[in-house]
Length: 206
Image (tube, rainbow, N blue to C red; front, top):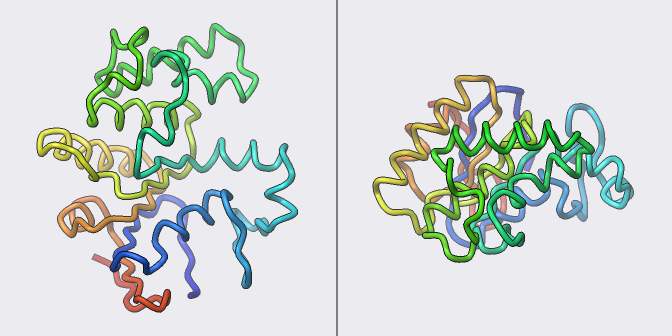
């Protein structure tokens, strides 16, 4: 496949299970390297050498946030505060700034008062919000979401759709893998369909 995603775009990847959507998102976030071909982020080739460069990967993950399909795979701290604070602390921010970011992000997602809650005891929708908060606390340029509607109740799904629209309107680049055509049409301005043999079958503006 060959494609380019511009800053500020909102793109959805669709296709059958096994077509490579999740693998592509992991590649975009630097979690895996391409076996062939070239992936560039902001003009820099992201290859195995770069992935093994801790300083580079720290900068990449500050700019590209990844929200996993399964929130349980992303949440690992003892409470919500530390979960959301983890990224800013890794960035080396002063603790006062970390607390400000955590407070602001939790407020943005309607999670004020959840600071001392244990992530594993939250509902599916609340876990998704905490995972999103942990990424947004680093203020990334691009947000990559793998099946963000998976397991959400209709109310939370509706909230997430509106929230993603707001983020994109504020200038965030959105890259979404989804089976939900409704989410794609409501949030994205560009739709890319992958075929079962891992090729771009259709790439169109909405």
